Amino acid sequence: MIIIQNAKIFNGINLISGQSILIENNIIKEIGKNIKSQYCKNYIDAKKNFLMPGLIDAHFHANTPSYDFYGSDRYPKSYIALHASNILNDTLLRGFTTVRDAGGGDQGLHMSLEEGVINGPRFFYPGKALTQTGGHGDMRKKEYIEHCGCAYSGNITKVVDGVDEVRKAIREEFRKGAKHIKIFLSGGVSTNLAPLEMPHFSDEEILTAVQEAQRRNSYVMAHCHTDEGAVRCVNLGIRSIEHGSLISLKTAKLISQKKNTYVVPTLSAGQLIESMGTKLGLGASSLEKVKEVNLKRNKAIENCVKAGVKLGLGSDLHGRQYLINQSKELILRSRMQKNVDVLRSATSINAEIMQMKNKLGVIKVGALADIILWNDNPIKNINIFNNPKKHLLLIIKDGKINLNKIN
Image 1 (cartoon, rainbow, N blue to C red):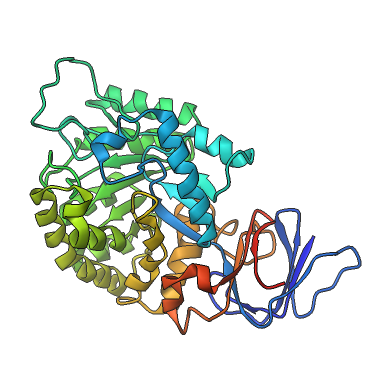
Image 2: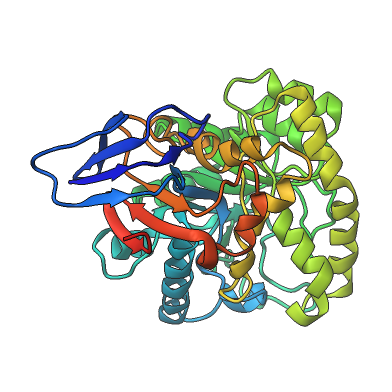
């Protein structure tokens, strides 16, 4: 049992009047003014600091140790796993108590985290992300000849064509415990096979993915930069539109009419690639595409905000040395949204997208005990996310203390 007293509490939606929280096992059991219990031996005085739900990164990559995507998709799995262990541990210590993997995250990492073999956040994974032949995510360089006629399947992505291949691949990922499915619906900036505006998959293939996910009470997240692609997402039942960099106001209004359709912008990735693309080893075509996207992405977010679209939050960063910028995603978003709305995106809305409403991303009786404490108020000063190491005082994940600088 843990009792935290004397805190300023943001519950994932608003500031609340309660100042104390009682945690029993891994559940928030009580919220009140001055909670006490004769059975509690672990009292924490928050000293009027800012307590909130643990952060959620809804577009995360555990299995890409660098921006060499072609290499990452082929490295030995043991090598990838050791890098992932470091990445996940660092992520938790930045206050992210939950991540949603966007391709390549698998049952091995999930099992290792659940059993305490490695330390890190809660891990929601899709298995391999699915793309079509020649699509974004097909990790075969166009300059190389593929002598084998068999389908491509790497560490991160898998190529599937046709309704039957899509169905079989998705069933296999769910067999291995996937929590959601990731597909590609447009070109991207980090590989050179597909133009940014290129539609991926037929409507029938996408509908098959959605239907298979629904049979598992799950959903599909779709890589999609384009406005046209976002319209397809809405019409075909995609729950989570990733990036959404070119969404128009008209399309944003269409998205907002759908109860279970969300957009997860990822600003950090574009900023990093534009500023360091050459050092990252990305080609000229990738740099040109990211410049185009970066010019328009802020407007897309503004369109979504104006239309009332529910926005999640994700970093889409790769590699331990670059994920140090993970929490700066909240600062970038604050240029288009109020600070409190950014916090909602990174907590309660992300949890809702992940089908964990009222369980994660909230300070609420009955919710899982994922809690962080800051020495400043991010509603007033969002810039604390520039330096989590300096400003984080307490990290509790699943009812267990992972960091405590307050006592």
